[in-house]
Image (cartoon, rainbow, N blue to C red; front, side, top):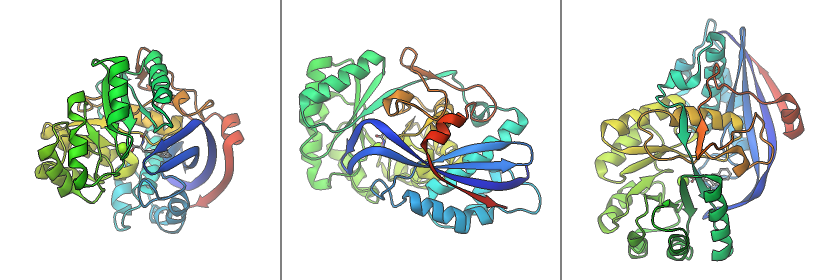
Length: 368
Ligand code: NPQ
Ligand code: MG
């Protein structure tokens, strides 16, 4: 397709409840949307960077800056541009994977819409619906946590993930097991809050038969995770540490993880996400789709990805109402613990103009 320009759009979405992780509390989602305008169609991408660099080095203002100064100009082509080339064209610019992902996703959506092809089919999806888990934040008290988990189980979520940090780990896990039983699929996510010196404390989670412990150690400490895996029986899953198919292959070779959380933003795009899926699948490593509190735009794409055959664990692909009372798109609604994989061309969903207008804080048009 011929790309005529890119619109950058900032939207501010209030969260239904504050979301606390080991790196801080979020009250609202500050999102950068990308609209790629081509000669025959347009497409949408969602940048998952947070407003502050707390999950990774990326943050929204930096993503917008690198897009307008470097990434978008690099997409200017005398002829046609296809999404498969976006990664190559942007490869010389280091890092900024969330920004790259949003651009590639927007171009891919535009291209697929023009050709009438759904994203799920393009990626190699084998499922029409995906089982969904939910990520439950750190709470002020155990009773409050049990109320939240009870509500999500009642809503139909098939897997619960508890956010943990030193001081909030064994006790909440034990409480959830005691209240809801051993059959609940349960896992924890530390977002890098521990060190190898905490191996003993993390091993205390072993009796609770968790599916996995996600990213207990620093993102750069891949070897540390391999060491930790020797003294903890619960499978280690990496999130922040896995930034590409190459880092995934290395982590697997080192024995640093038995499971990988795939987030397209973190790894620079849906095409790289698929390559990680392929690497993991070839090595018998289970993957699941992570979440970054996406609106319906990013959620639609994640659900399509989660329909690939190697996604054998439920993802953080929660329903729209887990985070937002009003989504930008038609809301994704849980049906018997699953979300339907969109079947329309491209993402299969688009922002609703009135909602988009309601939540937009600024727009910028960058012609090519
Ligand atoms: C994770 N996500 O798996 C992340 C972390 C996370 C669903 O647990 C604003 C934007 C707030 C992105 C909070 C889930 C966030 C965010 C947490 C990502 O590690
Ligand atoms: Mg995580």
